[in-house]
Length: 129
Image (cartoon, rainbow, N blue to C red; front, side, top):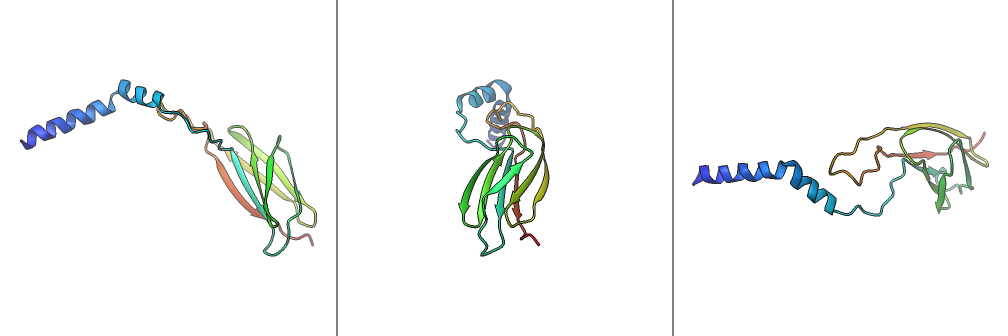
């Protein structure tokens, strides 16, 4: 009885790993409508200091939104590559960043992947001296 169960288990495992059934299952699952930007940036001021609007240069069309009086979040980029950017805010020291977003190959069942490894960064601006 035990060898029969083990044989059945092995057969099930082999059929679960076969290419055709896996591909069919993967094609049927819809991808979620969620965009993962290549670079997610959180910019903060020191505690208790209001953060004025920031200027992000060096990248095309950064999408920035205020999270509160002391923080702003930005989505940057459209795919893998190197992103070189500068962040400025009145009354604070400028910050220069270089971020590498590496390409990631999609597998058969990874069709929803953005094709890169997203990067999340958090920085705190320092008051200008």
